[in-house]
Amino acid sequence: MNEKPNNISEMAKVYEKNTRISIPSYDTLFSMVQSYFRMKLKEKEARILVVGAGGGNEISAWGPSNPQWTFTGVDPSEEMIRIAKNKTIQLGVESRVQLIQGTIDDLPTPNYTFDAASCILVLHFIDGIQEKLKLLTSIKENLTSGAPFVLVSAYGDPESTELQDRLQIWKSFWLVGGAESSKVEELVTKGIMKISFIPENQIQWLLAEAGFTNITRFYSTGLFGGWMCHA
Image 1 (cartoon, rainbow, N blue to C red):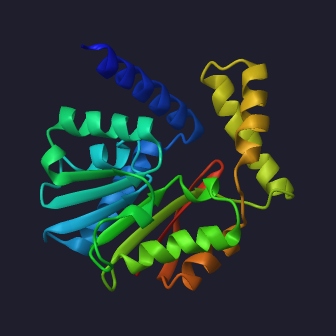
Image 2: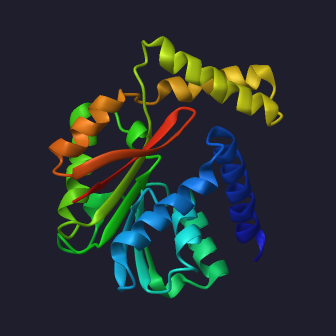
Image 3: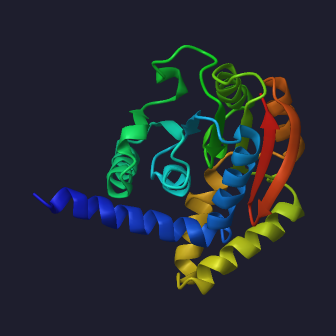
């Protein structure tokens, strides 16, 4: 009977360890986003949309300390949704969380229902500018006017030496974390270089085209950047 929770727990540990190597300031990122949301939402009851909620790290970071917030999370991965559900139970916040296996198009609610939203480490897995724009537009359409939104994504021009230099730092963190050199090179060729990098100015253009305003980059570490804006 305990086999499944143990497997979920091990998956979560591996996922979180690897993420923290890839993004050295990962935990600080969630604290920064929480502070931004708190500043904009004040003390009111708020509905938070989490796009890419698999793993449950947003809910783990923001749920226990913000009892006035409720969360709706979407993620296409069944395994990652299972990890997130397990975390909500462990933290005792499951009554304030709805998790949906699917995409934002599978939300059961009508448009303009959320008071804030996050999309962390999702956009770079979506190929094509139009598909990226479709996602961001859908998020915007599900937010109340003026709602805060945070986007975090890998970024950069794949042909630039600037991105290649940042990639060297990313690789060095994996080596310091104990990974073998051959494993790191495999992560680069089969992982990082397969994701959809686009330059920062294109990310800002996509956000503006989707209808967001006051777009500001507030976060940068290694291969990843974060932008805050308003619906």
